[in-house]
Image (cartoon, rainbow, N blue to C red; front, side, top):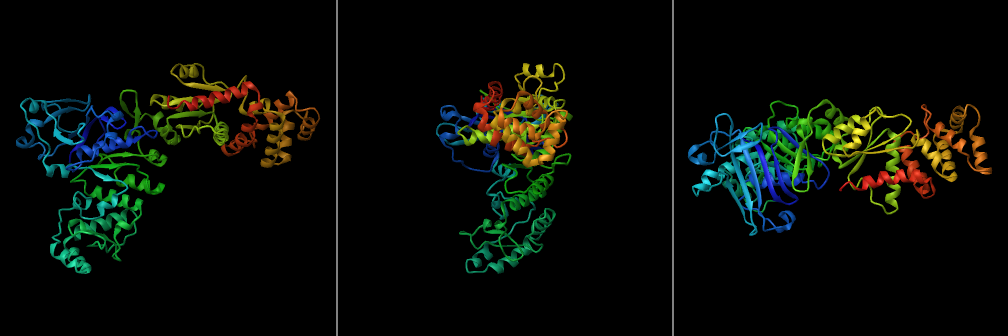
Length: 575
């Protein structure tokens, strides 16, 4: 069956212009919200769907400019003999070069033969579908696909209203899994006189193969509908037609009562069975209604791990689970630019794949703060929570996420992968160890941001050297709550080579205030490798939210400037 080779969209919703050559298998669009992912799926559906009309409004035009028409062009390759029929489509057959993505108006021997369907919407809001051919236009000719071919090529849309496919309606997947059709006229007339069960017996013999496929597919996917499912009249239908016939479980309960996730999973499995007749599937928000293990099962049923791919899938997701399951060749990042949309393939380089497995959440953001360790992640999160509670915009709401890179020697490996794919990146690190020479300066030269604690300090050093006595006392009390007085005291004694203790510092704080030497000792004690006081995301998150945030206004100006720098960068995520 045909597959999409090229998608061209102009002036549709948030997309000024987009050109994309998708893969023949899974094409999963990722990226921050409002980057046009769903609009791309909608454009494909509008262009290829078996509809005689679509309701457009002025808001479907980019920038509300109704004087510039919407054009959506979809080029189809891997054509079957019916679509290569010269009498029907000879004037519209073109050629496609997969390597360059270029299309020539004449078929050529060394290129793939393709057809291009175009949807145009002008200011009158009336959609017009046509096949694209310069030579046909030159002769004053114009036509669209035959209606039968449009129905056959129409993508299967698995969305919120997916239960549409659980009845024998026009275009539903049940009409694609086999050639069986039911003559329901007599039974439907009786159904009007309460003959639901009688029709169920009649349909059982006519739709046995299809019902068997449904039962087998549901069993494979772990959906509990039983083996003896039935095709019966839907008691809630208003009119009697082919669409009145729908799937019911062994107790006669319509399968449209299944949960959203089960419905989507079942339909995806059925679509796989119908691949011989229809290969293109559209799934917006893949994870909707599905637990992580069922997301994995859905991707498996769609052939995510198979070669060659059995289906061509266009999907969107915000699920880290999906990102971990898919290969970089199946993932594409949408990038809205000033004058066009770019779609960047994630790629299969080892560095990219490993980064995707470790930090899938970050790939769903617009900007990423690469933190040296868990302490920095918790610190930024806690301060963000404090700031948000006091009227600031959350950096997460602005598309910024934090990742724990596990040390300064590892921090620039994921940075490089993310920057290659167009993400904004900032590094937040300690200064007790330096990154490899030249790596950081190269990152800065490409537009990256680096915030490092001052003069060889770690985060713990900065806290105890920069905050007020009141905040330091609270830090000590919190450390005691977490680890106990004995552990904290031993850490202080070790860091000071037995020159001071917990009791001595607490006494000093009451009499004369905490000295610079004691502050330095506390910073060193707090980062003891074994049982560090706050070295976890949760512990440092609490410290930043409850102690550091309220104290910042009175803290050391240099330390406060570094914090402001981090959040100023994060707040410019959309700029």
